[in-house]
Length: 383
Image (cartoon, rainbow, N blue to C red; front, side):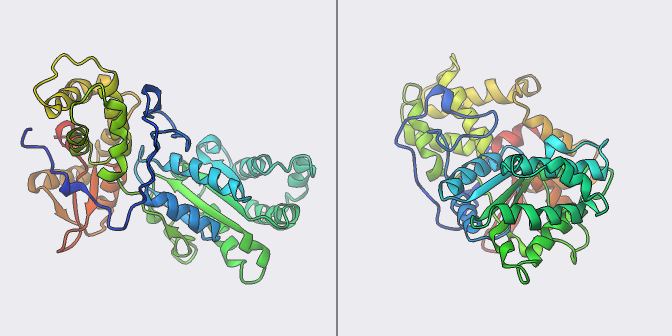
């Protein structure tokens, strides 16, 4: 393996006991998921500590947020958590801000879309004339109108069940021509109302996106994040993904050695781990080599790294590249990280941007946190 390859230990970041609830079925060709959310029933779904933490927190009524780079499993976590909460009798609504956020929308139009989506998700359309209701309360600000909907309609028509609103793609609302902070003020107000109105204790929110709290709202006094629980969506650990190799029995000689090699290349990055398993299973690679390590390296280089601009489907590396291009300070930080192998973590704006791009990962050695390149594939492509 060449000099750029990172060791397995350098990228393991889990510090808490992991959930290891592995599927008993072997993943089939169609069940390595690289496009869209991984269904909770899929045999290749990888359970992480975040699965249990988010489920338990929302069940207890805690406000939560899951912020991470793209293609790290946020949507899959949301879908699976929603499924489990609904099995417990908790009513859930999904609010995908990408579907309703456009720079051409006015504040009124955007909130109207949020309102309509909540009415649809909670199946309230037949219980009141929602269109007339929204127009009749046009004298109120959109925030106050949404609050009145929660007060007079949602919590009244759903008098007993707990209610969870899962807000996805929250970063897509940042480009609106009005301040998205208004909506975050609304979420905070829902939390604050719990003291005066016990019905609000049945309502909670979970926010998902490629974002940082500071990038969404500057005014800490109006921010909901001090009251939210951050759910860390860590990389896959070796033990968590070991079962994925069961579907590669016809391709590899030693499953333990194969998972070590896969993990060494991807660093547990969820999308790349699933994609590499799929490629190993389906690609007729001519250069098998003497060992599994030789064969897997050949697949990585020929199918992922070489001519990556053409092979980047669905787009993964391009989104990382786009986050770097034109940002001189970010490029200089990344260059320093490449040259030194790591940089001390200081939570600067540039470091947070590098983390949210997905290119870097924070690890916690004995002498303090450091940032390193997430995995060997990235260090080969973004050299």
